[in-house]
Length: 137
Image (cartoon, rainbow, N blue to C red; front, side):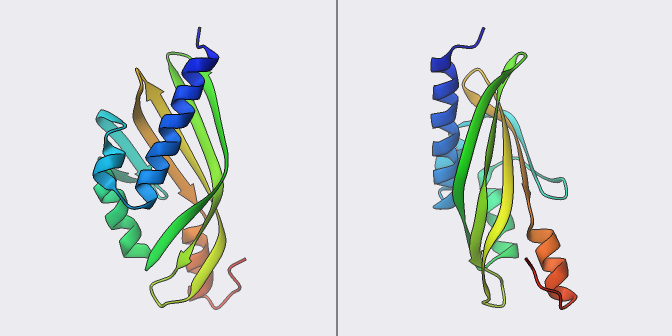
């Protein structure tokens, strides 16, 4: 049975991972990952290290940050799952500012380390709308 203390430790670890990811401090963020951790960004883009996350973000944005809203943590069989929600804000490659871009991050944690991350957000939809000359929001 998972204790409240274990859930709180996972919450704190995921928060620290997210904070280091946003600096960006990819090597610091990697300290929270298990060996062989799987990372998937929107579109099932596969990665294995936070350095790849930073490079991927650099290819899509001039800069991007997260405004954290919620972080829910719950036991899930033999591991713990954390869901973080909020919005992205930053600047597109053409210099246009954006905000309010929704995201959901899902983390699987086993034995005190993150083993899988799924990152989902509205960026692709917003990019498609911009290209079509439609309002993003």
